[in-house]
Length: 177
Image (cartoon, rainbow, N blue to C red; front, side, top):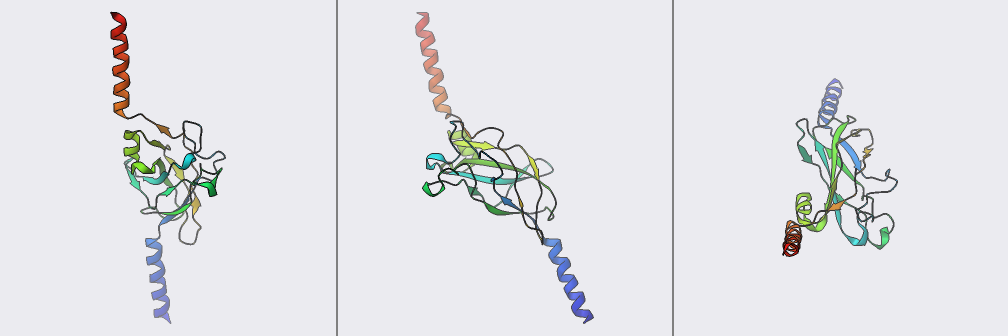
């Protein structure tokens, strides 16, 4: 009997040691959802938008947490295109029920990555770092509570900017003659 109790205690200690924090990655607490700079919800017009949660480490580096998710879209989700399809995310290295410093990045799915969308003219946006309660072990996962400081935006491709600058220079040059 004593051996069984000692073995059970050892197993519970090992499980507690390896327990990880979890959060329910969603934004249903945001009354307006995430919008784009054109005033439409993030995934309006069936534009796929991916969102990923990142752990902000002590040295300010980011660790991508999986799984990533997407904003709700399509006819079945009309009116809620600014909200995430919720997913449960495990946060390695953070003890359950401890706060975690997090950041959310979102980008147009067809570009593949946040940086590709940002540099290639796709929709993109990110939150500031925020602290969020976590769950795990016997505690239920906590909901993420975040807001994008500004709408998702598009930056024109560098070639578009270059052509615009050449056109403006040509107009100024022509005007001088």
